[in-house]
Length: 274
Image 1 (tube, rainbow, N blue to C red):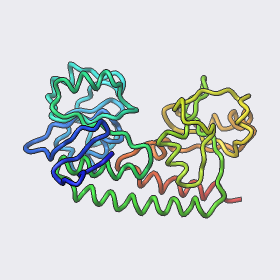
Image 2 (cartoon, helix red, strand yellow; image 1 turned 60 degrees about the vertical axis):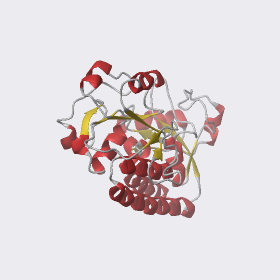
Image 3 (cartoon, rainbow, N blue to C red; image 1 turned 90 degrees about the vertical axis):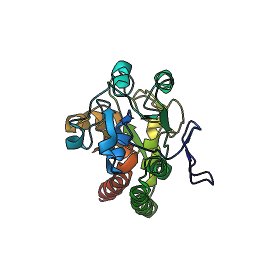
Image 4 (cartoon, rainbow, N blue to C red; image 1 turned 180 degrees about the vertical axis):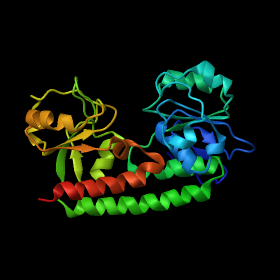
């Protein structure tokens, strides 16, 4: 994503669309859970008129915000009723055909696609620039820069470790290195296996040859809710130590990114202790 493009009067999103600062009251619908949280943290909760059922943070703020279905199954009739001026979408989270249909009648569709923690900076500037929240965006950026430097310092201080990050059970599924999750884990020195870029969320069996190189298994809390009850099962299957991990902290970009990096750095340190 680029921003400003040598012209402070517009910002370019991941679809290449140019967005100028919005004049007048905005009516925002966010179809991306982590960016719904960002909208609120930018001080734009008053302009938020719609969200998905997976948009759950901040809980108290969102209680009164209407739902428009899920990230993949948006209720377009309900969305139209809300008459948004802007709809925020994401390349991974939302279906292309749905976004194309929305773009036919919503004045401004903002397309995002952060693939690494540092990509959040462009997202902050994009939304901050469009909605007149540049100062709030700058504060989030400064916090992220600090958190990213601290996370990388932890990663540099410990031997890199090859990990299997579980996101689903029956079938067992993990993440490719092309995902935001893998890039975030790499910041603290955790390199995900298998070492592939596609498919982005591969299925696997416990007889896969690459599992021999795995040193630790991380069981995410989302989208499948792994719990303590699954640890023994996974350790038996993998023959490696396993630990639970907060999936939101590893996968939610937006304003949660800095807190996520700090959480991962602390977890990496704690698991590295004898």
